[in-house]
Image (cartoon, rainbow, N blue to C red; front, side, top):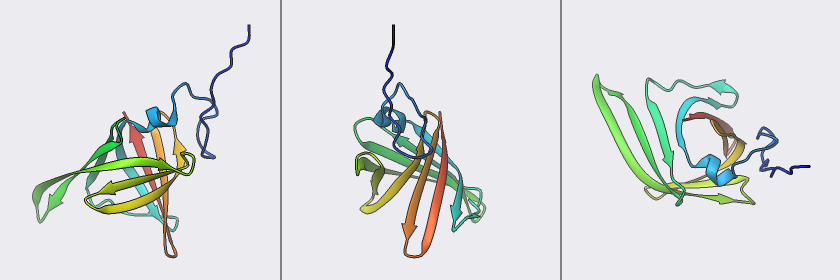
Length: 128
């Protein structure tokens, strides 16, 4: 008996075979662990960025850190949707729209790329 598994590979670094759709893999709690600007790792300045992406296309972004020695927490609601045959994701938070190219989308790894003029940003997230 031969079993055919669905392939959900879109990005070059996506898993070859996954039993979960890209939407199901994107629907997760993602924590930013590193980001780069033009290949140089940037400092997160002690802040924690968490994105909760929900299946209905909504999300919540939580930023926690310290401002002038005092703990700060900002929570913002937004939406997300796939573009270009699920190769890009559009995220809208408080009227700010950003389109990212999905470099890798696995069950617990998400890598997003954004080009802004001559700068290239790569964001690396881990999921629950």
